[in-house]
Length: 269
Image 1 (cartoon, one colour):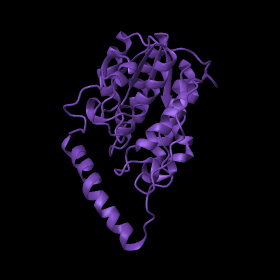
Image 2 (image 1 turned 135 degrees about the vertical axis):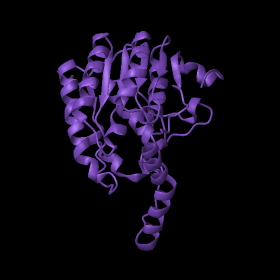
Image 3 (image 1 turned 30 degrees about the vertical axis):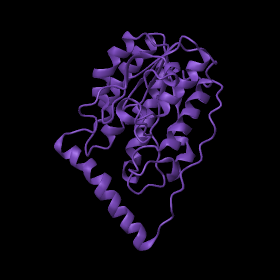
């Protein structure tokens, strides 16, 4: 069954799997691989302060769908012998015009079973509800069904849920990037606190204030929506139509275990 609360522990090897959500898109940092930081990096930095011998790998790549994440990331993750794994996959599948959610989640279930079977603590994520977004609204039924399957998988394997669906703070657009698809730096920071809280790990990350977004109406709102469609929605749709991905040509940020302690010492970032 799902653990209601994890016993605080000292993790030595954390591996993050997934897509842009876990890679850190929306939280720019030119000094880091792929130019982003993200909530997983922030979690790793805190865990490194708890365990001196801590190592962290982030195999997530933006644009990846469920089967690609499993095919490309599962075996490398298991080879690193993690004692902590976070996994989110499915958002890029659900946003396609047609998707077999049941079929995808059979593969997802198998992957989670293997991760849990390795002895790692496994954290899974529900998808965000996007209650205030007209763009996301038509997809909410799909995401709700996906979330129920994620909960069932967590129940059957003893994985733990980080419940993004119920995080009402993210209804504030100040926690989202200008592309309206990814969390902003403030959103990633907030997610890091939620993950650490779920793990029962003490941290001193301050509560991130949402970015101030102007409240627009009438012509200004329509103009802003047209600009967003031209700069973000249009290219996103074009990639889907042409079979391309924002992650084409990119590799994992940290394919092998690294120490976040080195980042502040001028080492790998």
